[in-house]
Amino acid sequence: MNELKNEKLFKNYSLNKGSLYNPQIIDFTKEPMFLGSGRNTQRFDNPRIPFFDKSNDKQQGDDWKHDEVPLITDKTEFRTQLVKSEVFTVTVQIQKLIFLDSLQGRGPSTIFGQITTLPELENVLLTWTYFEAAKHSRTYTEILRAFYDRPDEVFDNSFKIPLLMKIAKKIRAVYDTAYYYVIDYVYKTQRGIDMSDSEISNLKKSIIMLWTEINLLEGLRFYPGFLSMWGFKESRDILSGLAENLQLICRDENSHLSLTQFVLNLLKKDPFEDFQSEYKEVQTDIEDRFYEVYFEEIEWAKFSFSEGGFFGMNENITIDYLNYLFIRRAKAVGIKPDKTRLNGKYITKNPVPWVDKFINMDKVERLPQEEQVLNYISGGVLQDFDGEHSDEILRLLKV
Image (cartoon, rainbow, N blue to C red; front, side, top):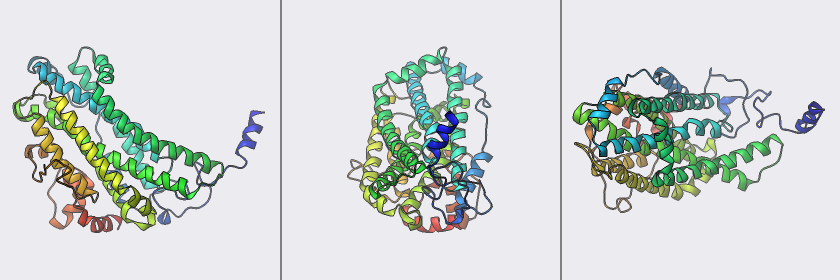
């Protein structure tokens, strides 16, 4: 009886773009990244956008295990060499990083995976999810187990930090909005229900805003935590295992950041993707969100050092670095930073140059003509590029 009911239920469903496998032949070299003819055979013989395959290969080549870096020495150092204010900074930074990676562990694949057309993009989203969930989140748990007698309390207490919950609510709202529109699209597409131009436009705008949110998460929000904890290794040569774990995580985040920058620039500039009109409509919203996140992170930096800084690291250093990063990240997606909106602070030279050795852990020497494209692919702060060169880079990456 149930089989007959299901057969009747699905009889009028679309058998193409709304299904998990479209039985019709699809030429993926003529398909957009999102909202195309649907999915069928995962094939990588002739990807329309080779950058996604290259990013996927790099991430898989950087594979590592969540417990491969020993934390025995760190455990002793954390418990004997850190004062109360330093323990506070490390604890709240880890709590924030856990939240960010938890969201990213399910967000991209859950949301974009349902509307992605290209096999190479679908595949790199799955790899992205694997690293965030299977690597990063499990690594933070290993760190908590080493540093704290009751790691469960650290997890639970993160929900008692008002500022973290405020940030979480802001980020979640963007994810939830996109998720709502994607689910609506999937539901109606499966049932052959026509969607209005307005509905499709709203979906596209939500996609753009979510990629913007992820760009800010990967490129700006992670760094106060990374920077402050690397400071112990740089200034006092302690917590080496923690530093190395964060280097591995940061290397992955840099690859993810380059993905977001690449996709945003394609949605903005490539008429084939058919997002240009919506991008223009939300351009002001994108810029506003950039500044909003910047000041949210300044507020977080002040909170994380509210019990005091330590040798070589404090809230002022962190805020200067955030300003420097903001300018780079904004330019990378074609936003011209406004000094007035930054309250007069406009730092273009890295105020903590030593941090680059932690971020660019696998940088190798390359020919000058290769540098801008290959660095963009391999990650690190070097993957940022000035907006005026974005057209050329996009052309090279699509060859």
